[in-house]
Image 1 (cartoon, rainbow, N blue to C red):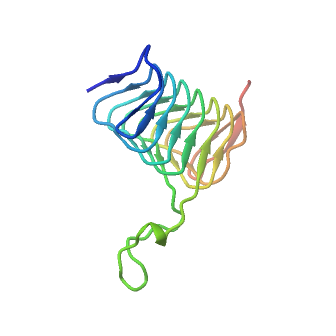
Image 2: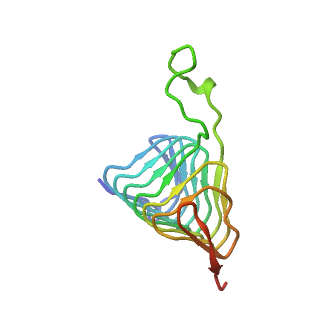
Length: 164
């Protein structure tokens, strides 16, 4: 199944706010989120409740965009990009009971306009990836990335500035 909303107004599709010209390819699991005009979402992507994707973004296959992730306009996500939204994840509480929504703290993450994230990058919660920044493939982002910089590695470290 491919969903294309070209030349149609913004609409809600299975609890997803879908903008004009959005392309969503087969096997995408998206719920209670928004995808703005002109964006493309590749196959085998999950976009959870409360996540937002801006205009003209390209989300490559096998990526995971969890609750609390906000992707602004013109962002590129390579294949298999994973976001984390819980700094201390656990399945159970100290008493052995299964954790519920009340037992953890979701931390928001922001990917600013024009940023590019390479394939197989993991982005920890609570960080901001600045406007026009580039994150090298395979990196683990543990802290904010300054605008118009290139970072790479585990943990991701500054390599150089990007020309605007």
